[in-house]
Image: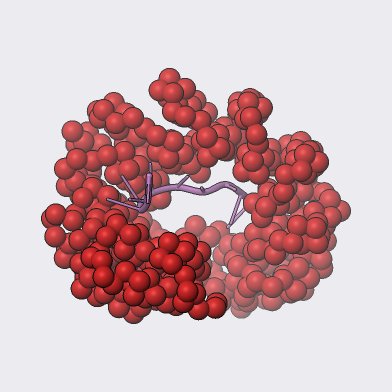
Length: 440
DNA sequence: ATAGGGTTAG
């Protein structure tokens, strides 16, 4: 980047806004500081500080950030809540414990609700649900951001019923109007659980009754939620009423179709979207490739996979490779599936190997399974992937490798014991009084 | 006007 020595303060601000890397941001900021030296920290100065802070949380640059922190403290800019909240936000992305420490140092005059909400989000990301709830309960004048942060925390901890109850408490016991972000949060929670359509309908109804302004995020979430809950009719209705459909709307719709095995409709939608000049993104390709997998459309899948990087210049991710392995594996083309794994440019994960192994079992091919068996056994197998042990042991039995069968059976037993103990200890340790009825 | 919560996948 050329040194913009000649730039005026306003132009430096613009350059700072575009700065992508920490060093260029700090460099521009120091130039700006020289420009601003005669004047005291003004609104102009702290705007610059905010812009310089953004790139500092993008990379892992804790030392740089601490350095900048010291400067902000010296120049008294940290007294501005805007600056303090941004710095806290940057810290919380790099190191939650440092963020916590900084929060304790913030003087009361600076610590407004925005600062507190940033800290709440940090606690939600890095602590357990109980600590987050304790922090939330301690906030005196909660606003809609405090509530939606806590709401998202329930869902990210997999506590769907509690999340929904919390949402109801928010709408019934406070005067706060849910905005589109809180609705997107609750809809995403419903969607990830594949919850029954009534939940989506009641959230949708709330949005209509309370005239929450429709925007593309809300529309996308509604389509996504209805689609995943299996109400493709409702999803289509929302989709049809979107004035200018973005790639996110299309993708949510295609995904819903793919998920409920309406593969030909998913593919038709995909082609229609392209025909209307909308550029598919990585998610769109994941959705359409999974549709091909479900329907056993090998050639279509191959075609779309090629299209993705040849026409749209998108680098395949592990999800796309996973879809391709699935497409070949389900069709019994085990060599092709194995070939994808061997040539892919990402490290294959347990899902991908499992997909191949399941097909090897179904099509009785031990030779192709051998490498996968060893790879999977070398991986960390989480409780939710526990079923893979049975698959592995069945495959070894199929190959006549009885020593390995015994070895896996032993691993399985250890795994089961650990699993049982683990889940019971979590239940016992869980705080009880943490229900929404406590919310005033 | 400027800071904080959400973003689709197997």
